[in-house]
Image (cartoon, rainbow, N blue to C red):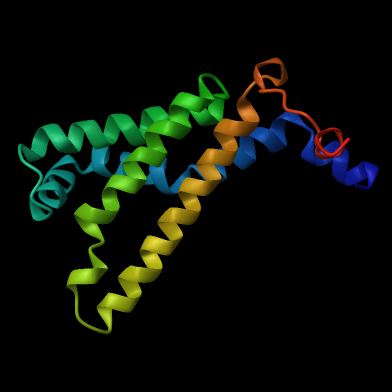
Amino acid sequence: MPSLIDSIVGSRPFGYLARAILTYMFWASGLAKLIDFNAGVAEMSHFGLEPATLFNTAVIVTELGGSALIIANRWTWLGAGALAVFTLLTIPIAHTFWTMQEPIKTLEFYVVMEHITVIGGLMVVAWKSAPESAAVSRPDFAELNA
């Protein structure tokens, strides 16, 4: 990697920016549900999540808390795990493309594919946030064939 790119990508501000952008969909949604709490409650009720007030509060805490942990790079694995599980749970609750008719069926299918990609990104964040010493050592491929 060229040294200029390496110095940018390796900088602390770049890390904060990258983590903030990665989590944007979560903290923006959490803030929207917090700012217009009644709309968030209505959304929970629309998807059959009752008591809607409790679910809206839990979603706000998960989205804002998970995002904050990732952005701050503290207990990153916990924030990434919480947001990944949350994202996975939204599929059978809000994106049931298999029960829909075209053309919305295909659109919701693509939303699910995007959700799976976001989960993969969160898995990478959790993986890369693990200390090197915590990594499981395994023999190199060449050593296995020696």
